[in-house]
Image 1 (tube, helix red, strand yellow):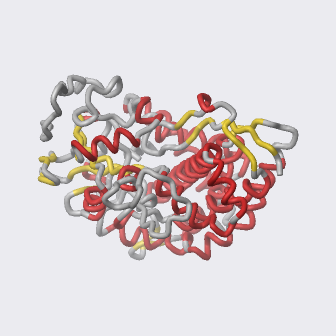
Image 2 (cartoon, rainbow, N blue to C red):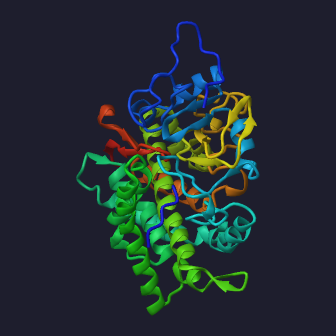
Image 3 (cartoon, rainbow, N blue to C red):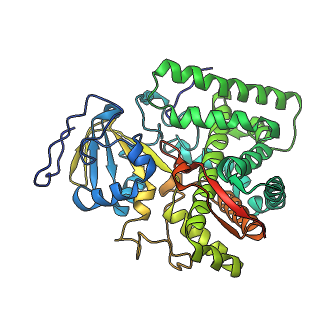
Length: 425
């Protein structure tokens, strides 16, 4: 089985002294002008996308690029929200912007339902999964998650420097998702490679992408067969037994949904935990306040999600359309930057500041519209518990070497190397 779903003329006036973009022939490489030649795969974006987004919001709120076959980048909250809610003009059949567009025929189901599904199929595909991701269901995972966090911290004994990304943050969602799907916990390292191949290899030739992803599909098919032979109470068995419209799910639907839960469930939470620890390592006042006022942590978690929202989603234009002052062509990409929306000063007071006791915080970190993250309760629980356990056990920590911190490339942003100097409590 080989499935790959893809997890114009500039309309804006340039400022005096600017030159129009001349890099449209390439997919990666130096950006000439972010308004006319943006690329979310470049080092500047990976290192710090916020100044780029802030600049675009002021002078070119819907940027354009000829890379990836043509695409658009809205940076205002109102535009991101409008597109996210508009399923008539914008399709979710591919949510990862790259050099390959899946055929229109895969809609409305898509390769990883329900996130790649369009109405009307999306409604039933999402509804099918809702019981497994309620707040109560997430709460059942909390004791095991807390125990895991403490066991990971136990392993730091005798060390002054730890990599909070690879030694801590990444292990938490890997274990939680493995438990929910009924996968062997020792398979965690494979999950990390699956995530990297899916989200960071978007500019590889299509055949190479298929080859890399085939390892994931072989793994998931093996898990399906194992669950058929040995049914147990987990999400994989649930999907195997589930029905839509009185019929069992197709194998491609089961495997596609497992892909979504595995990759999205791991990378987003891993990134959010790491970014929050990175912030606290750099901001002594916030860290000390959360140690002294642990009851403030749920509010702080929402602010970390707003300020360091890890996820950007893509859409495809269904047919030629005019939106926000630009003419979009059928099959143009739209990169829905929820991080940019979350830092729009028209939507949030002091949007560029992290205010851990912010009271009004209707952020878009979990998305907007019908595709708002199914695992929001689970992600919040994991982030809260991970920070709670860390601050209880390691109240005093700082960046060991700021220059050694690295961030992931692509549509999910979070620390991949985060060396912290720790002083045990």
